Structures are given as C-alpha cells and as structure tokens.
Amino acid sequence: MNALSEIALRSLNHVIQGEDWAKERLCQHAGARISIEAGGLSIRLAIDDQGLFFGTDSTSAPDVTVTLPADALARAMFDRGKLFAAAKLGGSADVAESFAFVLRNLRWDVEADLAQLLGNIPARRLNLLGLSVVHGIQNSLRKVAENIKEYAVEDSTLLTSTLETTEFGNEVNRLRDDVARLEKRISRL
Image (tube, rainbow, N blue to C red; front, side):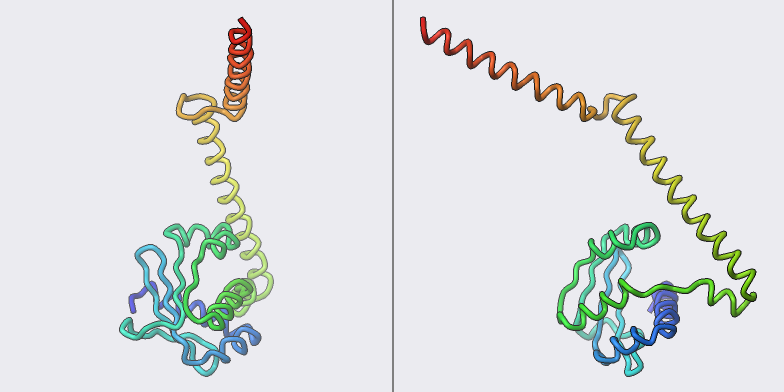
C-alpha cells in the first residue's frame, strides 16, 4: 500500500471512529473487501469487526468495486454530490449500498479535531477561515470558468452563442417554409 493510500485509509478510519452509526453499519459486513479505482490510483480495503477499514493485498477478489472518474479529487473538494453521482459500483449490492451510504453521509468535524489541539476559540476561527478560503477558491474557479465560456462564445469565433444558434435555426425553418410554398406555386403552373 503506497503512502497516499495509507493516508486516505487513516483519514477515513479517523472520521468513522467519531460516528457510531457508521461503525455499526459497516460491522454488518465485516470481512468484506472493497476496491476503489480512481484514475491511476487503486486502493484495496477490507472491513474489520469494529467497522473500520484496513488495507488488503491486490490478489484477492473484491466483494465491491468502486470506480471513480479521473477528476474525483476535484469533485470531492468542490461538489460531493456530483462525485457520488459519477461513481460506478459493482459487486455485492448490500455491501455496496452500505459503503456508499456511509461515504455519502460521513462528515469530518474539523473544528472538533482542531479544538482538541488548539482549544475551542482558535479552532472555531480557523474553521471559519478555512471555510471562507474554500468558498473563495470555489467562487474564483467558477468565475474563471464563466470568463472562459464568455470569451469562447462572445469574443472569439470558437463557439456560437445560444441566440445565434436559435436565430440560425429560425432562418433555416423560414427558408424551408419558403421553398415549400415555392414548390406548391410551381406545381400549380
């Protein structure tokens, strides 16, 4: 298991340890093996008797395979809903449903972890600062995407605007109707 997989495993177990409902849900599937594929990253996990995960070898066949899109990390940071919608699950339906339910509903209480290290007030302020930084980055990326779209549609000739496409379609329809009327006139002669 590589260092990135080990960090992901420890982080996931840390968050699960704070949620009794998640441990109970996963305990029902003790011994199940899960393979997560995301781009070039492959993580193999198994569920232990306490509802936590541990790394496994890649030789045993997994009970559940989770395939994530290549941009899974970006989706996870900015829109978890889109990440879960793009995930493809295969294998045991019970294990896959429980695993997906836990991941969809699991939330890391960053402020509580920081409070243990720094105290309540600094933890609260750092959490608010972190949230504002994340929202600022999200807004900046959204604005950059809107600017690129506006440039591609309005300023360059790369794409046509919706208005131009609609007008072109209307003109084609008018021309078709005019040709049909002309054909009728010609046929009457």
